[in-house]
Length: 201
Length: 246
Image 1 (cartoon, one colour):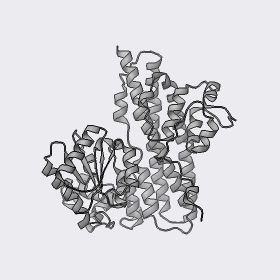
Image 2 (tube, rainbow over the protein chains, first blue to last red):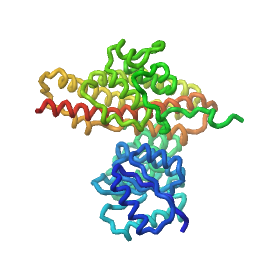
Image 3 (cartoon, chains in turn purple, yellow):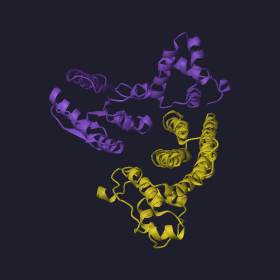
Image 4 (tube, rainbow over the protein chains, first blue to last red):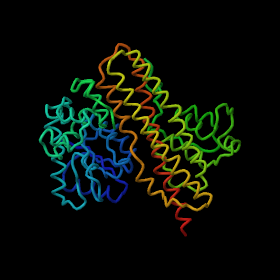
């Protein structure tokens, strides 16, 4: 295995050093481990260093939003894992490529990190396919026409959870989150007629 | 070819920014090193044309709390600056003034300016879809307006009542503000993506690029503004509330 450069970000020196110790003990990886204690330091290191994987406390994300970090990480193809030892909302954690828990055993942690590191190699272009699938286009059309999630689920005969997943994937692909922004996308791409649309939210 | 070091890096959010701004520095020198502080200094109430006066002298002349001014300048100058240790409740009146001025700037200057640029873009691009962008931005402008008005009409008067020790009958507390503090950056990000990636190519990109640069600029500004409210205003008001409940 080639040397791996890991970046650990947490406010606590104790946690950082603890994780560093665990990683060198259980992962038997050669390479360097960098540390960051706040978000801006983390961003600087991600931008400047040749990091291969980031393991961070989600609490460091400003407003729980990983978009800024993910943008840079995506460019450099760096996976970002969460180090979880407090309660976080699902929508915060879902932004990460993997999660390590404070009570994970050394071998579990090892498996998780290795899985993320190798996944990166197998499918380098996870989110690079920007074109929408046919189903996603159906969902997008409904969103653009002002349907609520429940109405979309009835219309397309899929569960609400599936609708939500589709919407999340659509937004990730297009970089557009709001319903009105998606409507504009749909009109520009002739998915709906200009007469049908109404910008609401 | 010129050596790379001769090119200046733009100062926005640069993490290499290590300069700590101190009271004996000339205000003009500080503004010349980081152009983003021009707006901040204006909102604080320090007008241009200050000559060679130091920050302390400027603050005295305009009756401003020096600690508050230094905190704001340093915060906007470098994200590595942590204001936590330097907060005291004497800063609150100046801070509220600053925030109100910033709100006024967003609602009465920045947003109308962006709307003007969008109108020019629509005229120039002659695309049947470009009107959509203006509608979208109008929705966004309403959102920002509601957000800022809530603070101007609910939060700031509440803080005033705490400062003047008048009875707070509304039952409001700053915790409510934290839960109310909505995300006003989503549509901004959407608009950037739409203009960069999705909107069809236009023959002339002058206004399109100009709008985008303004959007990036606005986003930085709003981001810093929210950071100021979250890590300076809220903790300070909590201090005030605790003191009152004793």
